[in-house]
Amino acid sequence: MRDGGAPRLRRPAAEPGAPRAILLHGLAGRADVWRPFLDRAPGGWEWWDVELPWAGMSDPTWAHRGDPVELLAAVLDGRHFDLVVAHSFAANLVTEAGSRGWFRELPAVLVSPFYRSRADEFDWSSISYYLNEFHRTFLEAMTLGEAARFPANYRTWMAHRLRDWVGPYGWMRFFDVYLRSPLVDLSTTTAARLVVVGEQDVAARPEDGRALAAALPDGRLARLADCGHFPMAQDADGFSRAVADFLTTLPSERRRREPEPSMELM
Image (cartoon, rainbow, N blue to C red; front, side):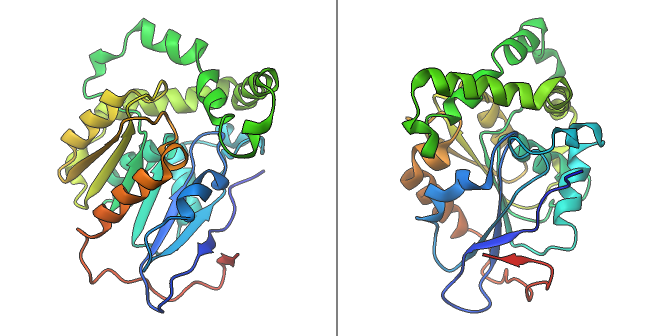
């Protein structure tokens, strides 16, 4: 049984007492998806990441173990951060967790989230698309990083392998979270939220992110024109600028506490 790893320090700050940010990957992703951003991440912050229970090709039984919002909360329980940056599926979990009292006072960057403002926006074609075209997100991921050097037919095979690893249970967890998005009470979230959308995203519709930013009490929107579902890798410079601009709007008094002994340093 895999419940996720311990948060890891990936880029330290030059000065002690710096605020601390945690990077959360999406469904079947890996923490390494943030590597292009980490090379450009705003200074003055500690940047941490973590391998979550739904990391790609790890133990797929995470989907048998209850609510993924609670799984995420368990991974970060007792950890103290000043900012959360969450991609895709994890962005939805952070948004929903805010309505339950977790992370609601923690500023967040929500990257490529899935969101509908009304329940009646879901129809049978929505289910058909996300079921039958589910592999397309993983195929896009195969064009990034080390996987990009593989032949196209191998990348296609790997995308289907990731889809099969997620399986029906994982897909149901994902789509159930998406279905719940219109029902989440966003009014209880008090902290600022930056929503980042790639205008070429075929997984999380750009209009999803625009609607979420408009619905949040303190929602801001950054649109990256030439990006798909992975703007932190597809336009790392533009993504980093958007995050840096957002950080300048946060209260300067946000400071981290001393590191917990259980945190793994890398």
